[in-house]
Amino acid sequence: MENLSEQLAQTMSKSKYGDRYKKLVSEVLNDEEVKSFIQANSDKLEPDAVQHSIAKLYEFVQERNKVKKGEDSTVKGYVPTLTISKKLIDISYVPTEEKLRKMRENKIFKRIHAVAMPKNIKNVSLDDFDLSENEYRINAMEKVTDFISAYTSSPDKPHPGMYLYGEFGVGKTYLMAAMANELAKSGFNVTLVHFPSFAVEMKNSITNNQVSDKLDAIKKSQILILDDIGADSMSSWIRDDILGVILEYRMQNSLTTFFTSNFSMDQFEKEHLSVNTRGDEEPLKAKRIMQRVRFLSREVAMFGKNRRPQ
Image 1 (spheres, rainbow, N blue to C red):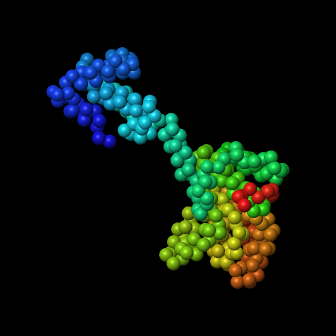
Image 2: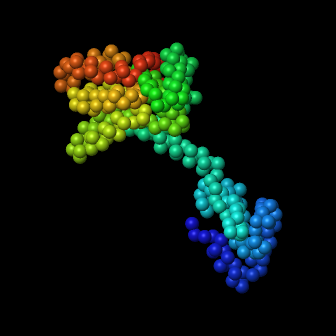
Image 3: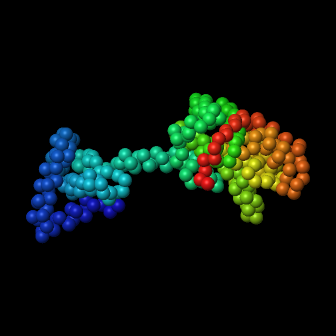
């Protein structure tokens, strides 16, 4: 920002502004905040500090008045405050409460890494999760809150995640996203991945040799949520070289992993993983994947009405 105080001093020093300058000086020195500041800090200021700081005081009054009227100050999101520098009066700009709130939110949001997920997932909250419908939702919520409590108390210990399954649209993704936001508030990094979309992205990454980098970013996440696994048919390559690699790394390193699915664990193994996109049956490979899924998570059912717009 161009120095407003220096601009003012140069302009007002011109003779034709003499009368106007005197009037402005009078208004500034009679401002209650200015008078209080000068009186409270008189022993810390040079004898002629007020005279040499008129431009700074004027800037303070002008910028403060803008904020009081609901306008932005010259430095948007910040308000002026009087300070002392080298025994003269100076101005600092401090963030408003709204700016501080947004800065806190942005800091939290940066801890949540979403891959092919809806934009609004960073705005959902556990407080808004409906518990009135049935016991399944209450149980799922209890499991989530128990996990948050255990993980935040001892993040260095191994913590199994959840395999949350149920019908289409019952709120599985919502609950996981709300949990992610709560964990992010406590300073933890969470990655949410819509797995079918991620699988397509990985296939497209083969041509530009980005598979390894993208796979590393996902498999090494502090807390990982794989959303909607089983929603699309899975090739042997995606199952073994993508999902299998992610789960193996996380199992070996005791990294917390969550899943959401329309399939129960048994259904996911027998009806989805066992048959590849070519129709080949591969039960042993499916069992190997499910061993890792069962090691990393505990199965939790959630049923109820479809809450998505029809």
